[in-house]
Image (cartoon, rainbow, N blue to C red):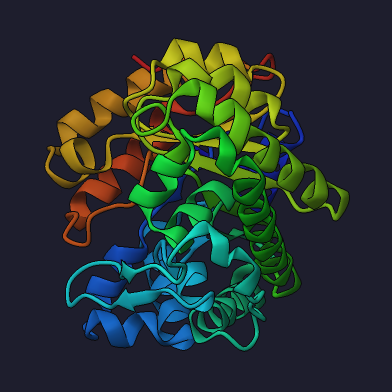
Length: 357
């Protein structure tokens, strides 16, 4: 196959609603990069230079089209004062929220992305990768968790989910969500300023696997929509990630105005294609553990071919894992993903796929 576009052109064509030469590929591989670096995970995630080199080394090996820069799911929470643990062989996790109750919302202080170490190091990584590769590869600088998930971390997930059920908490919950929205927005803009072409948020706590669709529509959807609108005004596309089965809210997610829905393998492929057609691109949705980490190259080829057949026609699709790849994912499985995407993801001029026997 002869590539007619650079990786950056390929991804930008998808975001503009056009038909690229082939389906672009991304790798949600920040933990794989940490593993491959040979550094202790805590040291790796505290070094923007190490994270950048890890991403660039992976790109030199795999040649994927979209580089996703992140250091886990608790960077903003840590910057806001939550206690965080850096694990020896996985992404960092939250240990303790910063708020004791909703009554303390007014004590929160907006972090400066350039002074909070957890944010600053990731911004350094984005800057280096964008400087070195951003002219030819799309760079996605993640803005960490979205307003709903960040608010849950600041209050404590159990306390937050319980508070959602009490109507008397609405005013304070919305104040917490507004604070979280501003945190995410500032970090996203900093990612843009460091060269990211795209940013993204994770909102898995708002999905049907955790929260009801009614709670999603009242406490998540308005804030995701506000964030997408504000970032669109600055010409920064937003990718919107929810783990698990998002079928029940796929239409709502599409209506937020986010440029990309970053979806999981548990979703029905036909449901999400119909929900996003002509509105958003889909990023995903191969099972990162059962298929990419634990499967065989033959299984990966089969799953890639199935997903491309449903999600790629007409454009609007970026292939890759539906969530973060485990750190020990075999390299040969990633090569199998890339090879299958190149083989089965070629477009005809009418937006349909080239038939490969």
